[in-house]
Length: 270
Length: 260
Image 1 (cartoon, rainbow over the protein chains, first blue to last red):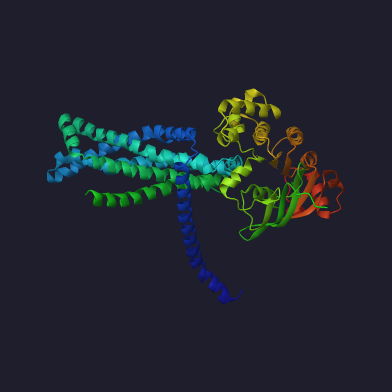
Image 2: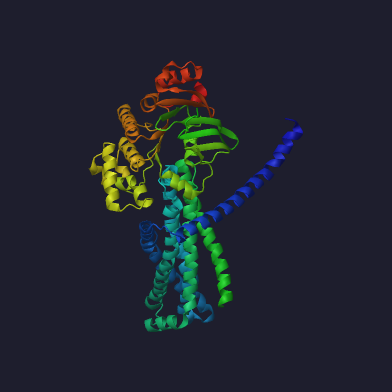
């Protein structure tokens, strides 16, 4: 190779790397889109595997209750303390119950429940499906005349969409209770006044918008777990990578979609 | 005189991975009711040959014909119907960890054929007995079975719906010689009993000669030698001779790229 050729090769490397990364990113976005459409079609059209759906509802929903509940109670309690001390700077301590309720139902309840589910369920889904890919179980399923999208992906997407709003409703209740606990036990608020202020202030839309967000986040969490697991390559290392990618991409997409949905909702009902 | 239509035929099949050609215009066929064994070293395209026939990989060129009909590029629904005529034993058995042994064996019956669970369980236990596994094994999970028992359960799953074509991917890999011999006998017996056409891939010459009517040796994505199981030891082809001699010396792991 001539010196000019070598220099050209060195100069081209970062550009090639950029090109490769761009192509990979575009390929992944397209791949996720096609995967989401196939998965949604499988979830919404028969034949349904109801036994699988029930298993996923239990795995994703029921077994996530403790972690979501604990996260919610501590977040509600910390939020109450922060708002009380921060509000004290401009004599606004008394609006603490309302701000806790609003913050939990509109934002923290759905987002924190989704993040907990990303860490717990999305990782588990990616690991399980990734291991099935590595051990040819997905190929075996196809040769047994069963569509893996219907058997594996559809029930998980459905369970994510159905269960995260329920988990969020639980997180909302426990989060507000965490604020109440701190307010009444630590900050000398009256229990009756705290509850009355919370109930009078909250509107149906505050809760509903959080639950709609949760359904979208549930879809994202299940989709990322399924996508990365299904496309895992390279044995145990590939399964580990798929698990990490599932959690990281779920978290990023949760925050990005949270901003988009909040923008949309504040325009619908400010 | 017209030539009989093969049960399964690869015609000029080419498959590449990132510029590397694994199958290079492969021409191969198996007659109805016959058992073809494909041998060859690692990386010579044996697994890819089976996977293209199963539709798990799509070739870049060529046709794969089942009863004279091209099956390359079939849409998913048609492919699923086709799979109802096919049974596969995967290399690691590929049993579903979360299901019991009988649910694994009856997977097709329950999920694709919608057979009631009670009847499916009875048929699964019959299939398990066929591969000499006791009914008590039915309610265990795959992780509770030895490697040989997992292979038998995988075999029961492959034959439970009495398929027309059976594929065996390295059926004796990872098994001790006694268990391997038992699996070979079982496969040979089942294929004969069901009258199915069989395509197997293996490194193991003892296995090839027990379960095969015909043997084809793949090298660099093409058939290098083909003949009856009895003729393998008498083959003149130097590549085949080296492979056979090496397989006798080190039957576990062959790297034919270096040998042939």
